[in-house]
Length: 242
Image (cartoon, rainbow, N blue to C red; front, side, top):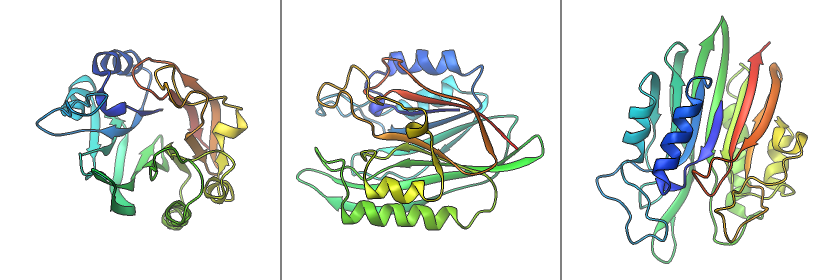
């Protein structure tokens, strides 16, 4: 599976190439900052592309597409694409932090999840874009509450679980530690040095993207991928359910 904050599709041509190259060997894509609107955000510094979801859907035409409601006032969403031969038992989403007003927009955070079955094994994949605060990847009341909600939600399910996404959190925060109390942090275990690409001019060297796995998820490989399709690096997980 591949996890990527797509930067609102601001590098859409590179994103399409990256996804196309990976689609033959990838079963699940989990994306953050996906737009599905009629117009581009031309006044936004990176010119987010309104048609990003439709473009990804065309590129991944043999995948089941799942898109949730926006968690920002300008239309950012979570999207998960699941290869067509994988049975999806349930897909749903939850609000983690309700949208709050900032200077010129509102922003919150959501979690999207899909319960699946493959080769006789059930498992769950949860996709998150954590609460964003400009220049701040540390603990706040909202982020502590967010982690509590994630733990509570995932505890409802007994099958093996994978939790992934852009959490907007530094590795040594209590908010990340709360998740580590219940799942293995692969970003830490595999000593990932950064999850930001060379396009992240102000955030080079930071770690904000994570994959966590529960028991019975056998990790064969975990690494970052530099696609130049985003200001984030993609995370690639090779796993099986045991």
